[in-house]
Length: 240
Image 1: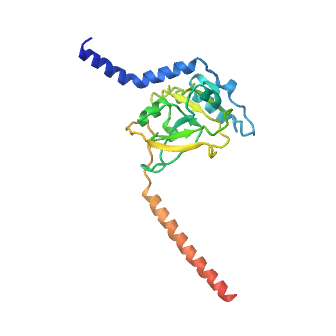
Image 2 (image 1 turned 180 degrees about the horizontal axis):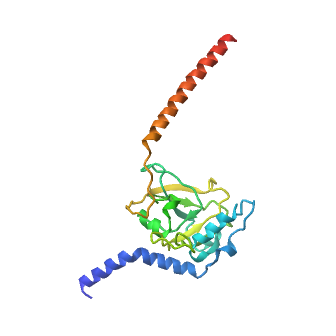
């Protein structure tokens, strides 16, 4: 094989690497997948249950072919797998590191936001442009904690026609937290992803000038009210 041919093959493999990774991961997961509806908790009032049927159905349909596999943190630990995952989200203030808490995680690391949007099927209607990446460490939770893993399905979920922007195919992990703010769950900002312009990505709306004027007016009214209140209290004290 000539040097030029070898170089071209290398470029081709590098270009296809995200697809190879996804395909390999999906194949490894597929061996143990079962219908999510058979293994996810039921609906009820207990913290270990889903609060509504709608939320439970949304979780089921977020997995490819509605299939996933339940695994305890102990199983992951025994298999030598990390108990730290990634979560992608929209920074509330562009360029300012922040934390976003929630149940949808992944083992996949994406450096470009469009990759995260595509492979995790982050439909723009969800308001997530994946411009930020953080670590989510579950190692301090009880080892019998159950998580649900599988492949992210396309969006919109069937029977709707999927959007070509959101094919899914990435690794998806779902945790039914009693409270995602549990202090034992450690969220740590990692870095901002490289942003790529695309119609597929949620666009953070620009603040309206009227919003700024309204905010200033509100602050002014609050200050005026505060002064009036203090003066009134002072007069009352003088009378007493």
